[in-house]
Image (cartoon, rainbow, N blue to C red; front, side, top):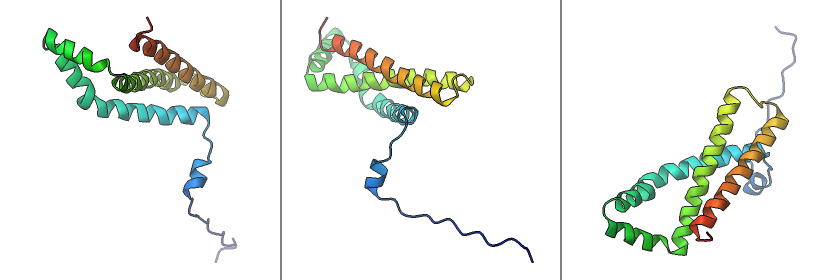
Length: 137
């Protein structure tokens, strides 16, 4: 017989929704989750929004004019702005993950800085494209 005492079994308790919502992710974790969300958004919107709009816009000048009229709606512009943000965030975070795959910036401080840089660059670029989309210049 063994001399070791039996170890207490780990206890797994149910976690409620308020406990999950109060959990604070680090900035790198938020960047990772939003990278996945933006990728899913782009994947789902590709056959539903992006390809049909592109197909209609290159068919003829009349269909292009009708798409341009449709896109002038502010609600449609907001949907396009969300798609622009999704693309830009996914692109910037993808570059971050390529750099992390090269084992650059793997420590905690560098990872937090690069996640903050992803948010800053993607939001700044979204602001620039949003201003252009809404006709500021």
